Length: 237
Image (tube, rainbow, N blue to C red; front, side, top):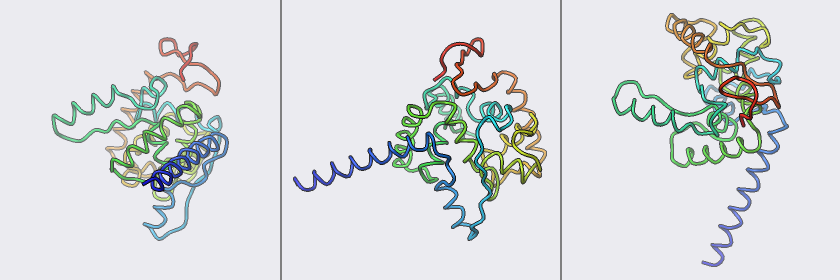
């Protein structure tokens, strides 16, 4: 038993040390490949990946606002987990109908970069662990930058710049407000919904997201503070 305890302690020490070092490294190093990219290549039997890493300030300023309007309107206010959204989703799901999720942009980023798709308790626990780490070591600006560079946006397409090139024929910096809203509309299921060939349902979602974008302030630049009352001023981290 003594040896088993020593092995467990060493395993836990290695796990925590390696994961914290990985999170710190990705604070500065671009994320060029994720577990999901590898899994999709294996599933499709195709090694082609369309992915371009670009800084957040090289993207359209509408893009962060669009994904917040679509996926996580309280992104700048919570600390990784949005308990208000969880409560609302739980109440909605108890009433029946289409199930609503409550994963934040921080949680999705943690899952995309460090984990695998799935719904097991182990994966969810690890997701919360990595979410806490990136909130502490990265901050909101870096989380959004990694999210928009790594998220799946179509079949074999990852990140906003690749999506802009292959679906809109332009660089990410030139995406219009409508383009960004349309991209955000596909994110619940980018392998089913297309921003290149949008259906009537996608156009309806685009209009809804554009309407919601009016209530979300511009995403702050790196080092810039955020005040939810005035959109400028106090700390948002």
